[in-house]
Image (spheres, rainbow, N blue to C red):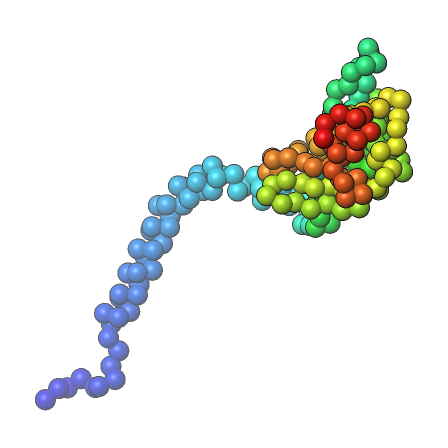
Length: 194
């Protein structure tokens, strides 16, 4: 009958596996330069480098960056230019934290450039929500405190709007004071509008 034992090893199975390994190695070597080029062109190498630098500098992965905006008076004394200053945000409420830092006043580098704030120091943040890409930011009555330099509250409103709209995903900002829209409060004090 058959002289071969039933449990004999089949050399063709070993040769098949060796063939698969050799072909895979050849394909890997042949495509490695293309994969490397694609990886570099995708920008991932730069992102990985930035991530490593941030980790070494002590920034945690939760740290993000935002900008706060302060006006710098021009030489004529009647107009301003608005300058954005980068800040680090450590929490998971970046807009809220950015507004809190805006209310704290200009950072050292902004002061060195002549930046000021027209938001009264008695102002506190009562709440901030985002709905349909519109930010609703609610301040205390301190926001309404009259100042000689900003009697109509346009400059302080611009600071808040520009800070919150630095994020490109935001379409508009509605400023509230104690839950009432600022525009309604301004119209009632000036007698214009509705």
